[in-house]
Amino acid sequence: MSLLQLYSTVGVSDVAWLVALFVLLYGLVYAGERRGLVLPPGPTPLPLIGNLLNLMGADPHIRMTQMARKFGDVYQVWIGTEKVVVINDIDLAKEALVKNGDDFAGRAPLPTTDLLSNSGMGIAFADYGRGWRTHKKLTHSSLKMFGNGMQQLESRVSEEADWLCSHLSASAGRPLDPYMGLNVVIGNIISRLCLGKRYDPEDPEFKTIVHYNEGLVDTVGKDGLIDVFPLLAKLPNATVRKMKECLDLRNKVLSKNIEEHRATYKDGKIRDLIDTLLKAQAEAVMASGHRALRHLSDDHILITVNDVFGGGMETATTTLRWILLFLVHYPEVQDRIQREMHEVLCANDPVRLCDRERLPYLEATIREVLRMRPVAPLAIPHKTIRDTSVGDYDVPQGTRVMFNLWAIHHDERHWTDPAKFNPDRFLDTKTGQLLRGGSFLPFLAGCRGCLGESMAKAELFLFTARILRDFRLELPAGVSPPSLQGRYGVVMAPDRYSICFRPREEQM
Ligand code: HEM
Image (cartoon, rainbow, N blue to C red; front, side):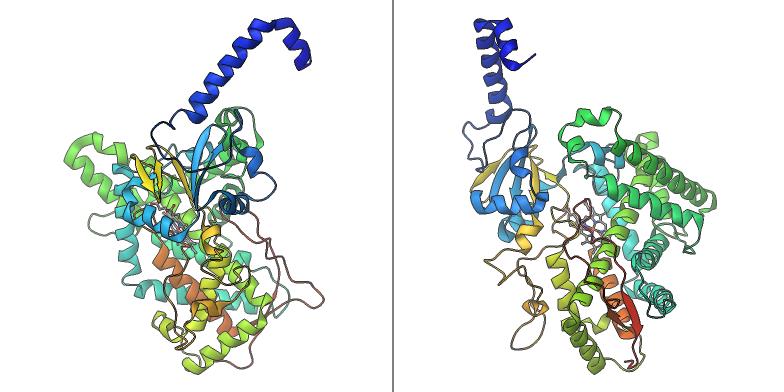
């Protein structure tokens, strides 16, 4: 039956009722809270789909950046019936994240992140409150303890870098996809912190971890429709099915490790993150009985370990893959880093974290890659926990807020020619030293900022330095450079690529 036929059967007064009902619903959903508030501007939403049509045609971070040119640094869009405020400017982002950090520290649940986090347990997808605070604090202290003022981390990265370099050497200059090697070393650093063990790359459990992580990266936040229309997640659906299979594997691996830790844990001897969390669980139960398990059940522990494992593995591996890719595209940058290292480091000395100050061009290159390809271009959506404001606009309690890192990192008011790869933009032209600040926020900031920022920065520096000390990165003969475009998802990653790692004749 066509729409016209439908109209002819329901009659004029029915149509009038339908229109009135539609206007009422539209008013309730989309315009209900405008009275008395100065809300950010934005495109006019359509019923049910909101501004989805405005967001189509390109990856969400690109469309949202284009919309900022039209509507300003802060605007609102409706994703279905959910209003989202998007912040596109560094000063306004800092106002929201640092100055009014608590106001913006909530998390808005999405069907896929709800599945991943068992309805908001753990850290990354937990709403602002006692549970999130407890887990973030415990994890922070555990990472600090096992990073041991960064010394322990430095020696673990060096050990893994040895493994990585022998893995790259074994390719004997033939084309190699660095994906697996990087996964092994980054995965093992995080595994030692979380599970207290190092995996052989052929270990079936390690392969399962890599497999389910890949599956989760492929599904979480990727099927936009499920997150826009949550009811779809309840229907038979390939994305949800794949996610659930991966989550079953994840739960088996992590539960087994938690049980092994419980069986071997001896009070006072904390070995890793799981022990830290089990100890806190035991103390909380002693102090306030089983009520304590509201925030520290085994399920909560599992999700926190997963957040650190997943958050630490995919982000750092992906950023290193971006770094290697940019270095292949820009051999002159590679040359300059190698010259800088040659001038500063003694032959075959291990690269140390304390060398960072003396290798500003290398640091600037890493920053430039993080600026151009932030692995999370829209970060993780926040939610306001009380009525608040940003810039000249009111933001009511419960509003979903997105920080558009892509727009911030490509802001022409702060960066000349932002689409151009130019590490020098991070250096003082007179002193050659690193410039701080800028329109740059790859780890976000404030109480919700990245938990692994220092660790990630240390890994990026040590691995990049070590690879460039030992190898020259080249394209295989006759192959055109792999794309620098990237695929949008829970992390924005380059397509898989293979390059040649040629041992350098001239060593440091
Ligand atoms: C290059 C590497 C990394 C980048 C670019 C990165 C970036 C980010 C970003 C943008 C956020 C969102 C912050 C927000 O929404 O306010 C975040 C959150 C988070 N990151 Fe990272 N991250 C990296 C590495 C790591 C590592 C190594 C770990 C673990 C050791 C980690 C653990 C986390 C956790 C647990 C959160 C959630 C924090 C919260 O919700 O309170 N990340 N990260």
